[in-house]
Image (cartoon, rainbow, N blue to C red):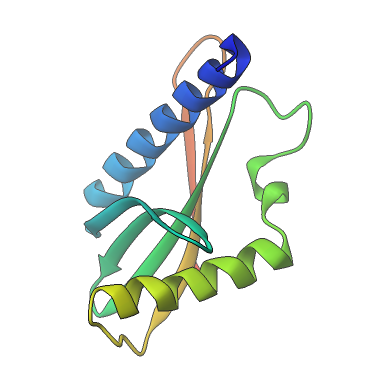
Length: 122
């Protein structure tokens, strides 16, 4: 693995940890992290009351190449919805209410990270 890939992977892991901690502090219950199947990966799976939340985490060090929000395409949303169904099937669940959220983490060179939780994207 190249050093830039290692740095990117570490930044992603950092962002997911920050996002998970933020969401749990907001009262959500963390059910799964980095769940994978043939169709892809879900960064975080949580419960918000009766609602199953599939959360995409996007972490950036700057917005020079766009905001984390701009990285969520319609195709990505469709894939996350399919992955939510697959996660439920694997866990023997059929939750009627599923929500796709985004947590954008901006990690500047100096200062604190900025966390933006957007509920119900798409």
